[in-house]
Image (cartoon, rainbow, N blue to C red; front, side, top):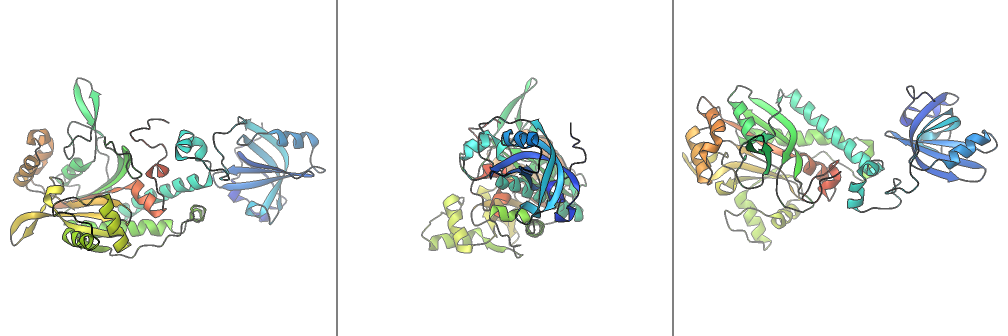
Length: 436
């Protein structure tokens, strides 16, 4: 067996290595027979290597062996590097040996070269194969870059990463969008959000926290922007207002863009990124309603802004923006009512971060008064007893605090101009898909 421990990635080899013996390992991407010369393109995660077999210069047994290997078989090739401007990366390898480590079936579930398209369901059913395509590969490399950038951003600003429970006894915000599970002799649920736990931590002295983790919503949406399992970036800070966490959020977005903008694989996705200028535009809920009215889209005060209205606003504004000062009635019980002339009214210190195509994030200043929080839970028609573990944290010294949650998939699809959220999740979970 050929040694593969010392193999090189295809992007580690250049024409400067001409004359050297190297080993590369990967998948047979393409084969081309020009009669006197046979070409094998080997693909690994970093790129492609052209294996060139001049019929008169290589061993006949090796020539025939290479010609027979099916596409997408896994091979290791050892040979000599030669400079070749027309080849990928400007070099080719003249092989001395090739070993097939795993032979592929002849009929492939989809084409990995991108020359023959496939429907999304076909690609998701054969996701392992879809990930071999350049487009899908680069989507998930960008996702990895994005998540690393987020952690670097938070670490540089002194936030502590936390891990909150995903099995809980009560809904975060009430409602029916819960996945029930059997928890020994009790009923439990998959968590919709780390909201309650990150607030509890504000009472513990852990005053700057973040979490990047899955959330679960048992919503029957079957749209291009909803999933039943998604990844959320959650932040909570003590001794701040909604204004400070809005600033942190827009700084994070700009930082992520700055980290991704130079990634060469964006060209394969036909995407040209620009780092968004901050601060983002801010409009109030009332101003949003007025803008929509001017476009003939009527929303009664106190109603939520739906998908159609979001798109209308996105067309008007054309860039990332915040909607602030929402009616309390359509925001969660933990959102702090605004102080107007010394009185709490119908407006709360809540905000949504919007991309022209969709909502990316929502957040607020939180209620830190035990009495007010309990009252707002009950006003929403929920039982305060169900939230006793949460309310307890507010009885023994809870500082003012604020935070937000940001959808990883939504941010990624907006950055890369991808239409369907399932494209940016390795193995998406929606109402119809539970495998692979």
